[in-house]
Amino acid sequence: MRVSAAERAMNYVVLVLFAVFALTPILTILLTAFSPQIGADAADGGFWNLHPENFVEAWQVGGFGRSLANSLVVAAIVVSAAVVLSVLSGYAFGTMRFPGATLLFYVFLLGLMIPAEAVVIPLFFDLRAMGLTDTYAAIALPQIAQSVAFGTFWLRAQFRTLPEELLEAAALDGAGPVRTLLRIVVPASVPAVTTLIVLAFMWTWNEFLIALVMTPGGSLRTAPLGLANFQGQYTAELALLSAGAVIVALPMVIMFLVLQRHFIRGMLEGAVK
Image (cartoon, rainbow, N blue to C red; front, side, top):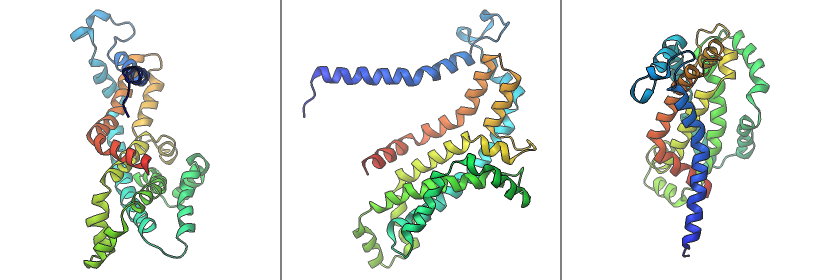
């Protein structure tokens, strides 16, 4: 089907409008982060009157080094555990037939239906009774459960679309379930697995409530908690607040830029399926 010049122009206009709508908040935060602080001379900046020293001051005053390190540790635990468990459960539900599979799959889906706000207080008392509060495990375990619920749903749909002939050929060649998973199923599902990695990392990095409740001592403050604490100190200083927000968001941006090709491909494949 041929597309007329008017339709093509209208498509570009719509895309540009959506791009402006999406980029305006980001550019506003960046410009504010480089703007002079209250009471400072706007002409005393660096190149083009920018103030990159805002990031240095926000990093030092807000203690973002420690909070970012805590978030990276938690994200590494959650993403690695959730992806491995989701691959195994998605492989079982997507390629195998066993009694109670449908019922058990719906049990997994409960993790998508029950919000964290409804269970975070009972979880806190349970983890406190086991002596796990103020530990990485207390922050990571609830998020692993949430991510596995989605990961099972996501990868089950991916694995069910694989040709049965591919799995049958692997079985005829003498490959067992584990070898089939590692040599055939996972390599054929790299975009879907990468999408799960990016989403799990993003959800874990942005998690605020679980990290707040499970660490009452404040010794393992994650990046969102560090930013909230920093905001409480500098409510009116928008330049420092914006610099802190950019610092906290930067790891997610880097993660997406590195894996964007596989992520977009996985999202498009999921939409088609």
